[in-house]
Amino acid sequence: MPHVSIVTVSKDDLKGFQNTLKSVKEQSYPNWKMVAVIHSRSEATIEYALEQKTRDARLIVTIDEDDGIYQAMNKGMKLARGKYIVFLNSGDRFINGSALITLLTEINASRHPVVIGGYEIAGKLKETKELVRCQFDSTSFAFNRDWGCHQAMIFSRNPVIEFDTRYELAADFDFVLRYLEEANGLRIPEVVVEITPGGRADSNLTKVYSEKFRIRQKRLFGFRRKLMNVIWTLLAWLKFQVKWLRKPHA
Image (tube, rainbow, N blue to C red):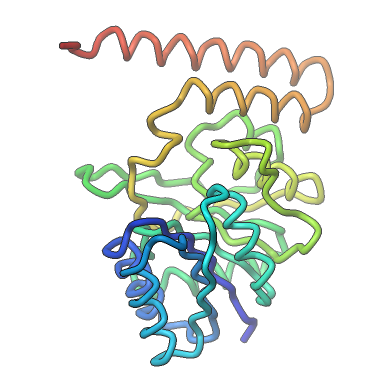
């Protein structure tokens, strides 16, 4: 029964943290530890987390200054000791009690460094991102915008790889591509998490596109893939502009 680490970062989100922790505790797979990295001014969340820690020793709580989301995730990874690692943002939750064992079974049997499941978006009726079972490499991941939900992924723990904090909004994208430098990943059709929208990336897509462009240029090699990167980014930006122009503005 391999040990799985679950890293959660929470800032001013007591209710979201409660929902995330509840979904973790409901997992049928028992051999997990959850590393909760909580912002230092989130007093209510800290109090709740410390109280829950006394009830369940599998919960590890650490307090973080406001250095940024990816800095906090790196801090959580340093405390993680599992063979595998999952990242759930505060407010995200496993879709059911067997979600963790679904991910674990797949990565443990396949020996891929990363496995991606499907996800739902909270508050959007039947808004489900389902995947077809297949292997994928860095190129197919880099040019498929529905594959970027790190909350629906499980990783083989690699102490050498951490989030590059020079990227404010797309360090998770870079993180996955670095894993794929070693071997192909595996995607599975099962939906494993429900994610909460409304993060910084959702409200700053132009910067997300810019950071992902830089990441692809750095991580993908060859003229063809670099040209694809230019075309892909331009099309994504134009699509975003068209959608923005069609929206009613006051």
